[in-house]
Image 1 (cartoon, rainbow, N blue to C red):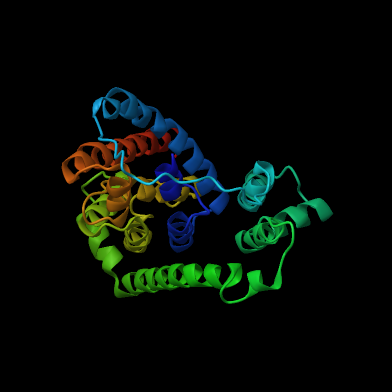
Image 2: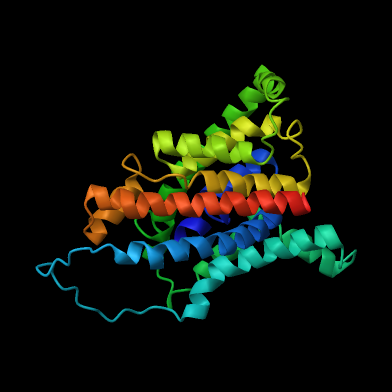
Length: 296
């Protein structure tokens, strides 16, 4: 579930960057990503229950016991607000853009303003600052919440910016036209973003890099592939996310996190984690393809 949402549902970095490069409606990407993720999880759960559950993993009885410490944590509903509210605002604006249930007036203006991705995320930031019972000064310092957030965001912004530059270079170089000419006789459609992302993910290991690079490569090709409608663009982003799941193996840092934390050896890591990501990614690709046939 965490893998599916990380790769296919904004506001995680990869889908947001891919949606921005392709020019997809973020609200539609969220709705499409949620739907595809939920359906794709069904075969993944079957894989976990009927195959992975039969593989024995040794228990390290000498591992130190972690003592639970009482922490001043907020209630669950409050903790979900920084994520849930921005998603709700973005989706609400997207629905209003397509169905126009608020055609004009103050309410429509408020929805359009708050549903803009940047503003919605700022609202989420505001809710995040309300999580501690007391917002102390050191939390806003370079070594506190703000500093740590800026460190994480800086890398994402640089990679996203580099991906956007790369995509613009591809468009200006005319490479998209050259590739589209070679693909005129091949009816790959929505599968092309998936295949490119899967190849890049398998080759270099990072899902985020695979998503951003694939979005930059396929963005100029979308009209030639018949993927230039709003829904098709959203499904293309989800297809890229599905491809970025296939497959996680030894060149992916997350592969080693999973194997080391669970006590798997490399062989079992390939049998369980790698094969599991393949099942999840391929299932998501099938769901995207069927959705495109029915709705695109």
